[in-house]
Amino acid sequence: MKGVTDIGHGRRFLARGNVYLPHIAVIERIIEETPGVRTFHFNFKDEKLRKEFTFESGQFGEYSVFGIGEAPFCISSSPTRSDHLEFAMQRVGKVPMPCTGSVLALR
Image (cartoon, rainbow, N blue to C red; front, side, top):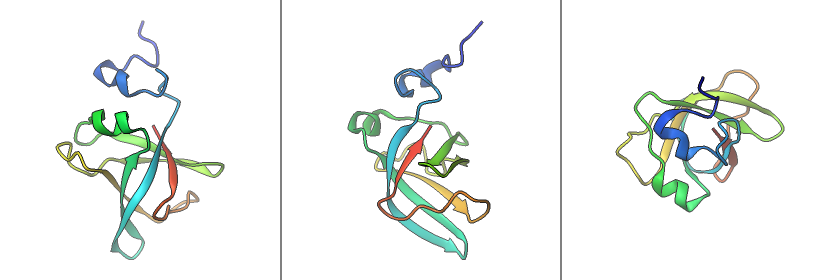
């Protein structure tokens, strides 16, 4: 039986081999798409992860604000872009919208 950290080729991107431990990222740019909807450009703080991270279209993750909460998101940037990652978010629920320079936990 496969363990919770056995997720195929993506295993190399797990924080310390554990699917539940987040990676630290920083919001570098925010685009206001419509009132209440924003697109966030972000990058991992870990330079090696920043250069090696790959994903597939439609893949999702969890975005966390330390001490506040966690919410799912879909990576909306193209898998062929290497300068940043992005996700879009609509203001709903209790997890606050991050601002430029915010530090997030992503998994």
